[in-house]
Length: 375
Image (cartoon, rainbow, N blue to C red; front, side, top):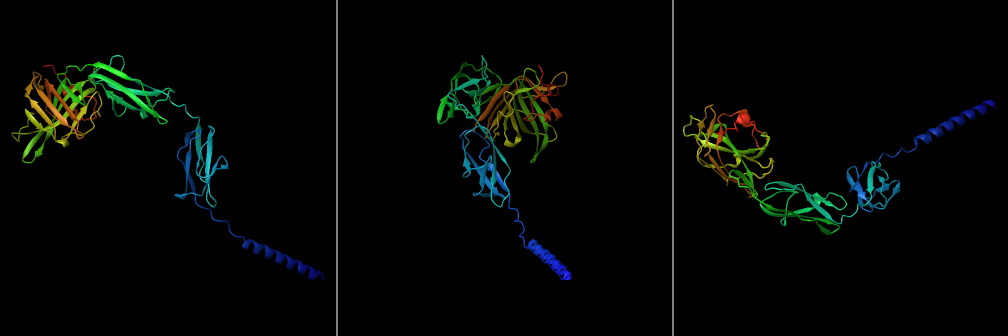
């Protein structure tokens, strides 16, 4: 009897063990993890009651059935607004997918509406011809709205917020649109601006820029068909008061055919053909980007009374009768014109200093280029 009890006990344990083992084997594995949700918003900083729209993607593909949860509360759809100014945490969820990363939305108090605007400038108390004036537009709330305002000079809209003063009378007014209403600023008047009498100048967009020195710089020679040409840079310039920085400059590369292929030639009188590829640069009021449009072949450059001379120190120059006249037509239809009469320094060798005088350079080595000649 005792043996039988023990047998039944052992059998029972075996059965229990088998039953447990069978139960473990039949448990279904956990479902595989789904794809990754990503959440974005039409804007992350907004004002009270301003609408924001969310977008959800699952592994890079847009989905429209995800849940948008803000601070733990699900919203209806993908668009909402906020009634209180604070920071909100937003998550996208979808059954069988991984939640998106948390997105922060910052809601601010609604800015006070601008009811009027004021236009100011940096022209100072005595504006002059050729002065570049910058304008600023501010609302009565103190907000700077220059970038979203329209500024008109004598009724014509300008690009940006700067304008170069021309001769005569100039009126400047700004407008700004808020909630469908156009606000108009006070007017700034620049009256009685007179154009100085300039013998030597570069003129662009109705404004003349003075030049007071000239130099021709030898670049080098090269074959041109059956001929040999010498390339010279012809430069008219005005330095600033420090003598170290360029205020205004015209820089034109011209080619001259050698009468004798074995002998270098200097610039000579006549009209020089202008090739768009030759390289022409301008600096006006210190701005290397004042003339952005390239020069076309429909341009002309005339040299008069150029004759090489040598002073007692061995410096080469052409005397004060030397005259350069130019009219460069740009691709945008505008023109750069000018004239320069006066002594012209000659740099007869392709010096490193001369080669560095490209359109972006703002200073000359006046000693190397002998700009300070006073003949």
